[in-house]
Amino acid sequence: MAQARWESQVDFPFEFQYRAELEKRAGGNPSWNTGVDYAHQLAISSDSAEVAALYRAAGLDLASDIRALNSGTRITADPIAVAYLDRFISFDGNLKVPVLTMHTIGDGLVVPQQETAYADAARAAGKQDLLRQLFVHRAGHCAFSSAETIVSIQVMIARIDTGSWGGPALAPGSLNSAALALGDTYNQVGGFFKSPPAFENFTPGPYPRPFPKRSSAPP
Image 1 (cartoon, rainbow, N blue to C red):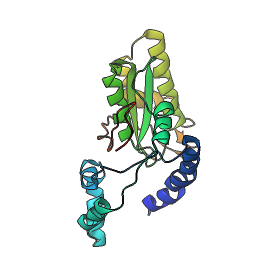
Image 2 (cartoon, rainbow, N blue to C red; image 1 turned 90 degrees about the vertical axis):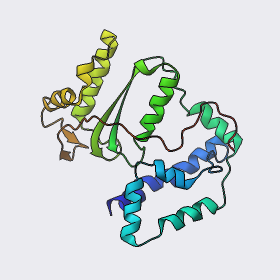
Image 3 (cartoon, rainbow, N blue to C red; image 1 turned 135 degrees about the vertical axis):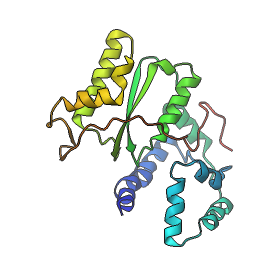
């Protein structure tokens, strides 16, 4: 039920209304599924076990649906639109300044696996020392408390002032203690409910469809 509500109330507006606006700016459709093997995509997905369990519970044939997807009509992209997104949206990892990201583990809109893709790009560009990534064990998109946001900004300021990330300061325990010390007023999410700080060591899985920066036209 929660997943269905999230799709209808959060994901669908982005996937339809905002997608239409993006295509208008880009001059066409920038996405494609030519050459995509959906069985492989599911196998490497962090949600593969859940998908299989839901299919079993519903008495449905997952393998049949995968075959239907793989045999379906393919969608090609408009090269002009791909070039637009490549120029204005794609990241190349060539960081110029320190970057600190923070992501909720249960984000259903911008999946945490995108942090993997971002880190891979920074590493490929030799800029991994400029990047640090924090994860908060909570559902929702950017569902951070004010306290979690404040301590993250403090870490970023310290990095700028000292030239070092200061390893212990990035440990979840240290971050949670610092956030908790800010008091109940700041340890709320959205101003609606109290939530203890929830920084956690987390390694997101692989991004399902990695892409090279400045790639040629899609297949």
